[in-house]
Image 1 (spheres, rainbow, N blue to C red):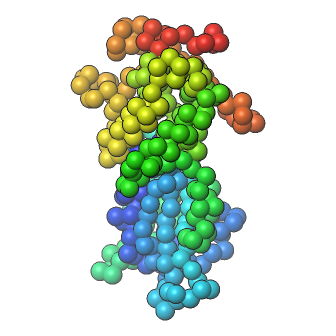
Image 2 (cartoon, rainbow, N blue to C red):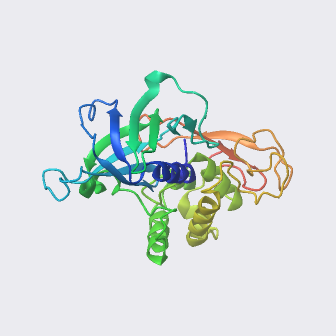
Image 3 (cartoon, rainbow, N blue to C red):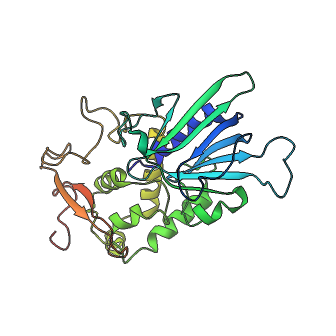
Length: 299
C-alpha cells in the first residue's frame, strides 16, 4: 500500500499540474459521483491528509459565493494499487507498479485548461473511496485521522497528540498501533517494519511492554516523521541513510532470508492481522530475530 510519502509526492505533482486550471472534462467512474457535472470548475489545490488525496475545487466564475454552489473536494485514496498518471506519465513510486493500467481500472479522469491555453490530463487508476463533498465537510472523511506526519505545520501540539495517542494504545501490539491512522497518519507496512527494527523491538510486542522496557514514544514519533520527511521527494525510499551500496535502501522490509545489515542473522518474514477489525487481512512483517528478539507469543 502506498505510504504517506508517496501520497505526498503524488499530491505535489498533481497540484503543480492542475492548480489554477479549469476543468473541461471531469469523468468520475464511481456510482456515488458519476453524475456530477464539474465542467467549468477550477482546481484550487491538491493536498494530502495522511494517505488521503484531496482535490479542492472552486465553482465557475460568477458562482463563487453562491451558497447553492459551495467549494467542493474530490476525495480519493490510493489503497493498495492506486496510482495517478499526468499526461500519460505515471507518478512513479516504489509502492505501486508504474506500468500501464487497463482501461477498466480508470476511476477519475480530469482534463484541465490553464489560462495560457496549456491542457493537462490527469487519470486516477485503481483509486478507491472516491467521494465528492463540500470542502467544509472534509472532516467527515478525514477528521478521524491522527496528526499527519507530513503536515507542513507540524509542531509541538501535533507531536504531543501523536505521542499521547501511541501511549493510549498500551494494550495493542506495537506493530498494529503504528498502522492505525488514528494514532498518527502516514505510516504503512514498510515503515512499520523499518521503525520496529530501528527501535530494536518486535512488532508483536505490546505497547505497554515496549514502554516498560524503556521504549520512548516521543523518540519513535520523531523518527517516524523524520523518515517520511527525508523520503517525501524520493522515488526510491531509503531508511538506512543511503550508505550501504547497491540494494541498501531498507533495513529489513522485503529482505526475508537475507543477512541482517547489523548482525548478519537471517531476516524473517511473518504476518500480523488486526483482531479488532473483522475480516482484516494479515499483513507481512520482516524482523531480525537477534536485533529485535523473538515474538513474545512464539509466532
